Amino acid sequence: MSLSTHVLDTRLGRPAAEVPVRLDRHLDGSWQPLAEALTDGDGRSTLLPGEGSALTAGVHRLRFGTGPYFAGQGVETFYPEVCVIFEIADPSRHHHVPLLLSPYGYSTYRGS
Image 1 (cartoon, rainbow, N blue to C red):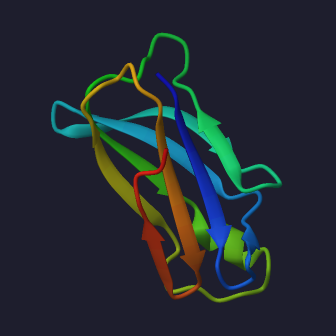
Image 2 (cartoon, rainbow, N blue to C red):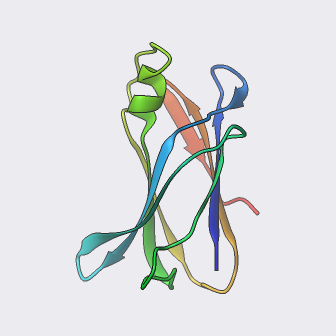
Image 3 (cartoon, one colour):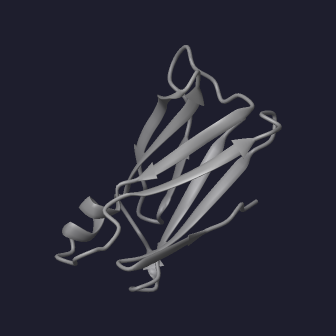
């Protein structure tokens, strides 16, 4: 299974490049890191777990480093980090989690 994201900067009306993204899995009461990446020039990233890890059914979290992204533009933000927690029921399917982002708000949904 794979997991991808697409971050769009709604303030500028364009993709958000170089946003740090981390994928974690919730297991036994704590979060375990699975993968880290930066969004590309189109605001996209595919997160694949490292060696010895796999995406499995259960609760996962995407952590978006929005503070560093906006700081790099000299823009103040109310949300220095955005965490999106979601549950994977069928690990054999691809999952896509877009993030629409501005300095003072964000929205997300399950994409395709």
